[in-house]
Length: 358
Ligand SMILES: C[S@@+](CC[C@H](N)C(=O)[O-])C[C@H]1O[C@@H](n2cnc3c(N)ncnc32)[C@H](O)[C@@H]1O
Image 1: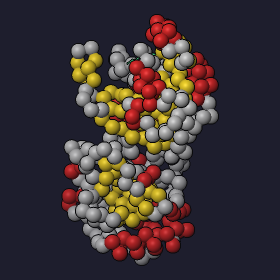
Image 2: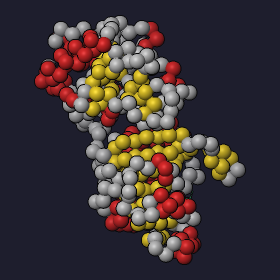
Image 3: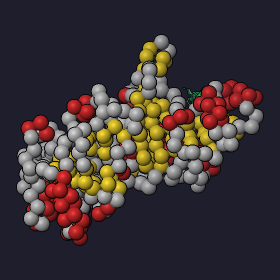
Image 4: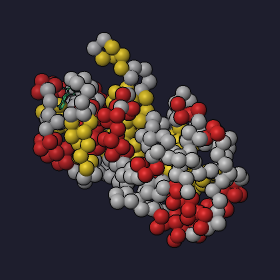
C-alpha cells in the first residue's frame, strides 16, 4: 500500500485505524522525514504505539464519530497538499445495509463501513494529498456502495487495483482491492443518466462508454487502455491505465480512429481529442463519448471542425446539476455542421453503443 502512493515526500502520513501501526512503520521506512499520526478506537493499541514510537502522534479516536473525526482529521491534514492517509479499515460488519452516512461535495450518501472510512478520510484531504485504502473487492461492484463510490471518484484521480493474493480474515479468504485517490479539483456529478437509459436504436458511429469511472484499472495491467475524462488533455489522449486482460470489458474494446469528448463535465474545447488506434482498442468510461471515423485523417478533420465550431457545441451541454451532453444532442449539433456521425456501428458494438434515435 505504501508503494502505491504518488506523493513524493509527504510532510504527514496518517492512519485512522492504525491498529498495531504496521502501515505507518512501512511509511516511516519510506519517508523518514514525514510526521506520523496514528489514531484508533482501541485504547490499548494506541497506548502500545505510544510506547513503541514516542515520536509519533498517537491518540484514541472513534473514526465513526463525526465531531471528533472532523476535529482531528481537519486539524492534522488542514490545508496541506502533501499528506498521505493510509487506511486498512475494519471490514466485518453485521448486516449488509448501507448504514453509514458520508457527506461528499455537499451531498449525503449511504454506504457500508469500510467505504465510509475511505470517504471520511478523503473528505478531509486537501488537493494533491492522497488516500491509499484497502477495501473488500465487493465494495467496487456492490449496488449498496455504488453512489458513494461514484462520489469518491469525482473527488480526484481515483485508481482501484486488485490486491495480489487474497487476505486471510478469520479463516476465510477475501478478495481485496487497493483504492488510491489523489485529491484534485472536483469533477461534476454523473448527471443525465436517465435521459439516455431505455435507449432506442443506436446512432451509428457514436459510442457512449459503459465502464464505470472507478473501473479496476492500473498502469500495471496489460489489457486494453482505459480512458476517462481526466485522461483527455490539451487535445491528446493520455494513456495512463489499462484494464486487466481478464476484465469483462477487455473483450469488447472500441477499435479504429475516433474523436473522444466528455459526455459529462464542464465543456472544454481542449478535451476534444483524437485517438490513434494502433490496433489494441480502447475502453472508455461512462463519462466519455467516442465518435468513430473510418480513417485517421477523417478523425483529425472532425476534431478540427469541432474545435472551430466549439461556440455551437458548447451550449449543447446542459443539465440541472453538472453539465452533460446526450448522444442525441451531439448528433444533432454535428448534423447542423454537416457532419455525419457514421460509419455504421458493427453488430459487435451494439452493446457499447447507447443512443436515442433522432
Ligand atoms: C484491520 S485493522 C488495521 C490494521 C493497521 N492499519 C495496521 O497497520 O496494523 C483495523 C483497525 O480498525 C480499528 N477500528 C475499528 N473500528 C474503529 C473505529 N470506529 N474508529 C477507529 N478505528 C477503528 C480496529 O481497532 C483495528 O485496529
